[in-house]
Image 1 (spheres, rainbow, N blue to C red):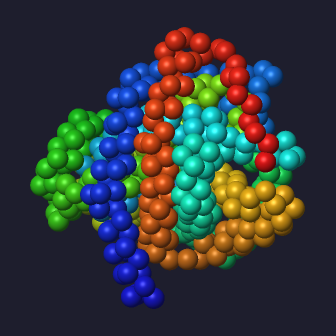
Image 2 (image 1 turned 90 degrees about the vertical axis):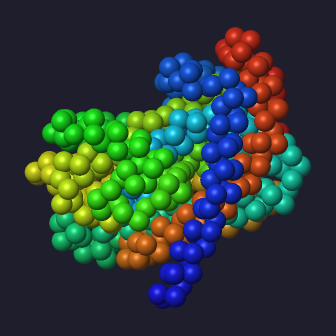
Length: 462
C-alpha cells in the first residue's frame, strides 16, 4: 500500500507540473482577453442568476442550476483543500488559488455557453449537455468526448464522493469521537434519499442548502478575521510576497518553492471552483435560459462565489491564524484548519464542523448528477440500456460514499488530483478550439446588447 501511495503521489506531481499549470492558467487568461474581461460583468451575472427565464427550454431554473453547480464546487476544497495547499505550498498558494478563481471566471463562462449551445434533448424530454456534447457536436471529436465522459464518471468517485465522505467522517471522528463506520452508514442513507429523485430533487435540496451553508461559513470566517484583525496586513503581505519568493514565507514553510506554491494553489483552485474541469457545464445545460450567453454569465458567478469569495476568506483565515499563533502546526492541511478554527472557542469548531459536513454532503449530491450524465452519454442512443447502466452506476456511487468514509485521505486526494487533470485536458481543448464560437455568441447577445432575445436554435432530440 505504501508503494502504491508513493506511485500515485508521483503521478499526481507529474501531471500537475508546469505543462498543466500553463494550459489551465493560460486558458483562463486567453479567454479573459478574448472575451473582453467578462469578470467585469459579475454584477449583471449575479442579477441574472436570480431572474427566471419564463417559457425557456430546460429542466430547472438558472438559480437551481447554479445552486447545484455551487453545491458540487463549494466543498472540502474550500476548507481542507485550501489548507492542504498552504501546508504543501506555503502562504503563496493562497494567492495562486485566488488568481485561478479571478481568471477562471472567463473559462467557466465559456464552458457554460458551450453547454447550452450544444445541448440535446432526450426521448423523455430532459436536457443533456456538457463538454462531451461540445466535443462531439462542435469539434466532431467523438473520441475526445468519450474520453471526457469516462474521466468524469471515474472522477465523480474521487473529487465528488470519497474525498467528501472521508472529510466528513474524519472530522466528526476527531471532533466528536463518532465512529467513521457509523457516520459512513448515515451519510450513505442520506445521499440515497436525495439522489433517487434525480436532478430536480438534487436541485431542490441544493437550492435550499447552498445559500444557508455558505452564509453561515462566511460569517464565521469574518468573526475569526475580526479576532486576527491586527495581523491581516502582515498576512496579506506574506501571501503576495511568498507567491513570488518562497523564502518570504519563512518559519514552518522552509523547503517550499514558488513552483510548489503555484502548483498546489492552482491545483486546489481547480479542485475548488472546477473552472476548466468541465463538470459544472453538465448541469448548466439543464438550465431554463433564453440563450447560451445568459447561462454563461450565470455560470461564471459560481467561480466568483466559490474562489474569489469563499476560498479567499478561508486562505486569509488560515494565514492570519499562522501569523497570530506561530505555534500552529502548518505542515498538515486538516490539522491546520482545525487549529485555526479552534482559536475561536466553542463556536469555531462548530463553524468548521457544520461547514465541512454541509459543503461535502452537497458536493456528493452535485457530482452524483455529473457522473450519471457522463455514463448516460457513454450508453449513446440506447435509452433503455442507458437507464439500466445509470441505475447500476448510481448504486456503485452510493456504495462508494461508505467506502470513502474509511479510506486513507492522502491517497484519495492524490487520486482526485489525477482524475481532475484527465477531465480538464479534453475540456480545455474544446474551449480553445471553439473559442471562435464563444466569441461569436458573446458578440451576438452580450456585446450587441441583445441579452433578452431568445435563441432560434432548438436542441436536437437523441
